[in-house]
Image 1 (cartoon, rainbow, N blue to C red):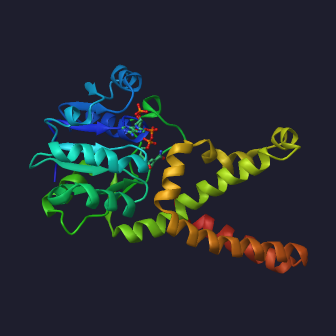
Image 2: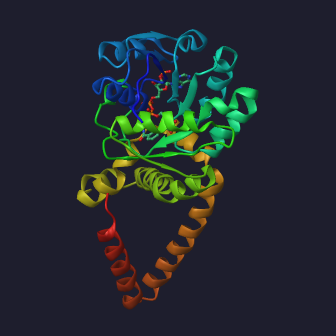
Image 3: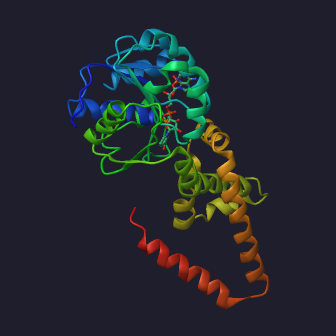
Length: 288
Ligand code: NAP
């Protein structure tokens, strides 16, 4: 199915919303992009960068005339944004999101969209960087990357197909799954690593000898902690939005750390080697 929109409204024209707008423009899949956010300065920058063609800080005004509205704001802002869109949602308008956790935004939509819930198609592109804002946006971000769509029972097949087509036309590979499964898997592969990276950097930074520790930081530290430079608001919101699944995987990981501690204290070379070998084999088999 091909995709064309006469107007996409991107609420939150930062890294993800901005990159989607640029990508849709690059492939000629949109006639007009309307930007929306809280600050005129951010939106003016998005205009200068060619991400949006117009902007408004008024959500109800911004969505007028759009056939596709993309919510690309931090997770805890979703409910308020959806509540402001609901009164002006027209038949035929699809609202979708890019949030990193799915059950919480679905709960938000159920709470505020009433009989318009079927027009909301939840989605999450598995692509990003540690940078934020319109200056971080680039059109190629989604090429060959996965996007997960978690359709609702209330969605029409046609609306889901249109959201799938939008992502496919910017080069993404789309899969559909339940929100529950999405949140379970992403807790392990994305949310846990981010929280571990933030915690590692924070705990080292608070050590008395932190200056010296960071002076001798090398490639391993850089690779493991790059994502700790990500936006704290976004990650606070993701942590809270998927707290149940993250807690479960964190508990499991804590047990693994205790086992590691025990192997170190008992100088169990065999167990350490077995753990590192299993990880090396698994890591070599992962295509990223
Ligand atoms: P970002 O670059 O910081 O962009 C967020 C945008 O939302 C900003 O332009 C901000 O502009 C606007 N905004 C913030 N609060 C708002 C509010 N209450 N009402 C309206 N606009 C608001 O963040 P991002 O990385 O694009 O992330 C956006 C969404 O994508 C998040 O839900 C995140 O979970 C998801 N996501 C992120 C990644 C990633 O790697 N970064 C990957 C996949 C999905 P103003 O400050 O001007 O309002």
